[in-house]
Image 1: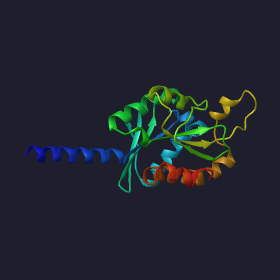
Image 2: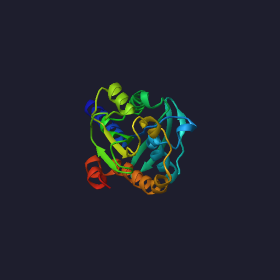
Image 3: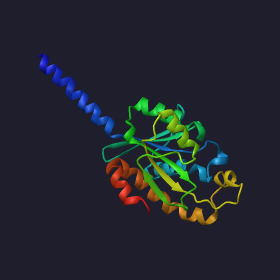
Image 4: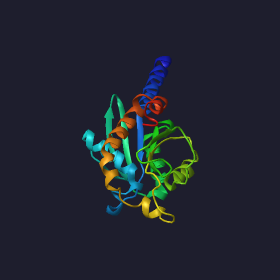
Length: 208
C-alpha cells in the first residue's frame, strides 16, 4: 500500500515537472505609454504584439505587466510585456517566473540592439547586457546572465550625441515597410524556441 502511494505521488511529481518544462515565458522588452509604441526601443513589445494578433490571443493587464497566453504543439507560451519601464524589467520577469514556476532555460527575452544592422537577428543562450538597461536589470535581479535572449537589430544610424533620440524615435519609412517580414520571422523564432529548442533555433535563424 505504501509503495503504491509513493508511486502515485512520484508519478504526479513527474507529470508536474513535465508540465513546467512545456511552459515558456517570452518577454518582450519595451516602455509603456503611447509615446513609445512605435519606437525602436519597443521592438520587444512589437514582436509579442505581432504574435498575439496573428494567433488571435489578447493581452490582459496583470501584476507588473500585460500577459497573453498562446498554446502551440502542446506548449504554453506566456507572452509578457513588463509595465515597469525598461530599467526595471527584471522585477516583472522574476515575478512571473516564480508565479508560473518556469525554469530559467524556458525564458526568452526579446530586445533591441544598436550594434546590429536593422532587422538582423542574434539569438544567444547567455551573455552580457551589452549596455542595454533592460537586460542589465534582468541580470541584476535574476543574478545570472544565463538565459536565452533574442536581439533584434535597430542599427546605429544616428549622429553623435543623438543616441537617445534615435532609440526612442519612430521607425523611418523604409524600416516600417520592412518590419512586417521581420516580425513574421520573429514570431516563428518564438515558436521554434519552444518546440525545436534553443540550439536548433539558433542554427536555423541566426543571421537571417
